[in-house]
Image (tube, rainbow, N blue to C red):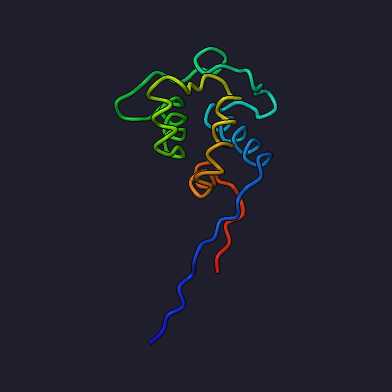
Amino acid sequence: MWFKVKKTVTTIPSEEDVRRYSLRHLAEVFGVPEASLPLDARFGYELKADPPSDFKWNQFDIIDGDIRDVADKRILKEMAQGKLVIQTVGDYCEHMVRCSVINHEEVARVLRLPGRLER
């Protein structure tokens, strides 16, 4: 007996879409209006996180997880060597754009991008 298997195909998002959804994601995580989130807002200064807990991730834990989930080995190595430091909203958006070329499916999952088609 033959079964038809559905494959999920993710379209490669545009840079503009990735930036827009990156801002939307950060706004949701930090609980601020998307329109009030400037690209030069710095993590730890303009964007504050809840106190760390052993039982629940705070905003910085979530964002750090996102950054590492979408990165490949080369980018993770750059981060470990201090060549890539993400300190602002703009840095986060550009990291997501860069990674969307390398790992578009994971970026689409993290940012909840539309465009997942089933065949």
